[in-house]
Image (cartoon, rainbow, N blue to C red; front, side, top):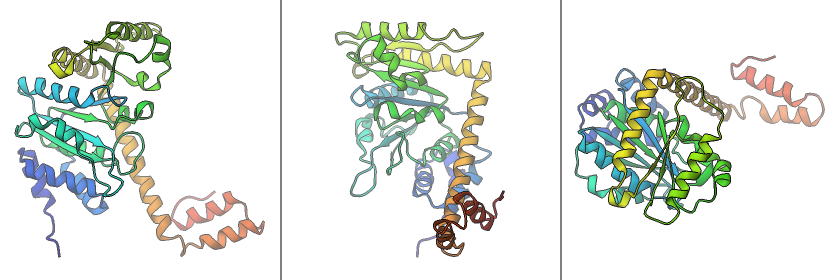
Length: 324
């Protein structure tokens, strides 16, 4: 029989920066057991810190992992503590992460000021793992100044990252197409910072120009609104990475000055509360599937005695929810 986990002790040790405790808390979060999730959230609620959460996204092949690793190095050179959540596709056999990003970020593996975790999507759509919000809470409580969330890289559908990040970085590479195509790419609409990576290739200047033209065509922003920056890098050689960090810092300052950080944090909290509540309702529905007479309600609908909305009202009433 497994030993009970002392979550408050783990949380205290994680706050002191103990990597083993941070890893154990993240494992509890990723396992997804509701009791553990509740206990971890309760233990960390007053210690979530002020971590700057940066989402790094873009289509496959643009160099997200290389860029993330380079940014980690630049942040560590400034003495900042960094967390990395690299969301990998799930293995179709084990359900676990393929761990490719941890391999590519091996140069930081022995640095106590960096915590790298690969998380499996486990079939969750949108480019992020379902456990990512709680994992962010763990890393923030552990004293990370910046947490980088690198998404799977599934193209335009991974805009979910904007709902978790304070700052969203969209990577593109030369050859993405003309300005019209750039404007059509839904993923580009979420960026706070654009990074044109592999800028030593032909077409890099044109790609950056297309992005700036796209931004100039956007609706004029009022007052102190943020205007996305466009930065060119060759991440494999470390070129332009300091400019990326400067752009991240500028956006963070704007977030604090404008009050946008608080607004985004509130939206994230609302989404998390809603998701937890919906999971609870789904769980109760499954528990009461037979006991609540769902098959009988379905029969009454088929027999024309009850319409589906009335049946749903009866079912939610049995779950303790409001009826009509």
